[in-house]
Length: 345
Image (cartoon, rainbow, N blue to C red; front, side, top):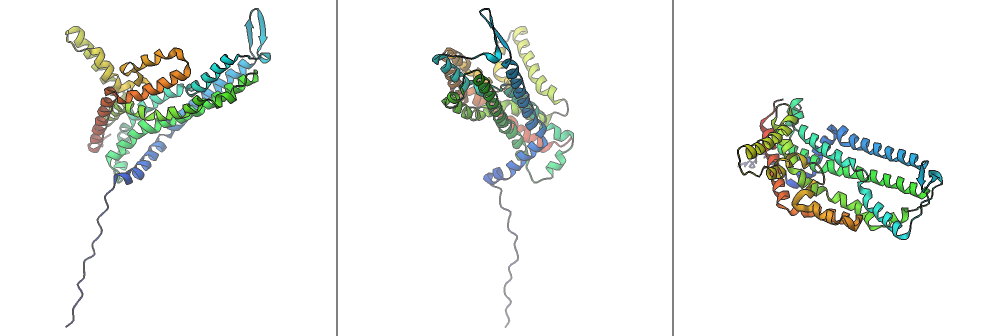
């Protein structure tokens, strides 16, 4: 009796679930690279152009100042023949100031950071609906959550890190120009500045403040992404007009209707946070942290720098920072929900 072997049907293996770690290693880097490629004009050329302008301005000022003249006590001293002489205490103060303050030598780049984060977040989800490119991106095996989170990561982490790197590089170039200029006048500060602890701490302090900025700017980025996902047109007017209108209504209700709303406190803690949080350093407004920095103003630049750094990380543990971050996360979740359901331009 012939027996046929029992044939088992071929079963196709079930697709492996996408683990969060694998998603972060593969999908998120690809989405971030896509965003950088799509917005390379704003994300790369804008800070580099500002950096080049700052360096050119400092070079021009150094060249013009090198041949200038100084009038002192009825005498005119030619700039080219002038020799700078400082006492030990004055030289030490100059070294400490240069080693501590140089990281903010290209401060206009921090102002550009606020504008870059604001306008990138405002157009991140609106532009893809306006030009209908959302239909193409939705055809890819990428979830709406991953797409929106990648855009939030660009605004909260990538742009700040990029600006900090460009700013530090620009500040180092500016510092080198100033050291060369002072050396040409007989005052060599390069060695003492480069060996000062604050010089190297500055290279670490600024990048380490990016997480503080990300938490502080989270409600503003969340609000802008929410408006970008919801508004059919005129996103700027919606993003700025709604908080402005709410501000006017609060003050009107307090003054005209006599309601005890404490409008000033509500505007400062809630409404302004939706827009101003993209500006770095504004977290020092929390719980009198700026006053703590002012109290150390007479103790030298190193003490001020240390206090600024300490106060910045102190702000992370405040209720205003944590509740604002929670509100920002909720608005980003709402933006994901809207993108999942809206595809029209």
